Length: 149
Image (cartoon, rainbow, N blue to C red; front, side, top):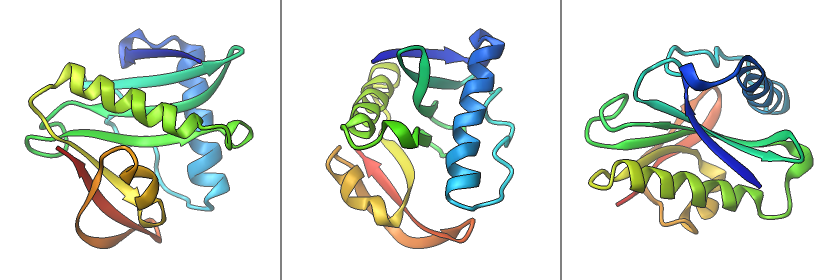
């Protein structure tokens, strides 16, 4: 795996296209969830894009948001996604390990928050994330907030 971490202005047009295709393939098509993925946060100066490349193909992605961009005092990991054809070999765990490590490196004093699909609590729990609060519906999918101190 080759990992790159870039702000919006550093992304090439091809990288931007690839990440938007991957997010749309999974969040909109696979999960049959029509929503506006382009929420304005991708361009924010305190947001970074973690891209995982394998044989020249984008197979993993997460969006890292600095503390206070969307949640006071918390760094946030969002848009966590792996390509369907790359699943089953631990790539999701590599992605979460890398995303969490980058947040800790960049914002060492901030706990990390993510809004997880409720069915994936165990997956995120393996990476030190604990449920916070009640479950909630987001785009007709049950979610729960999770925090890693």
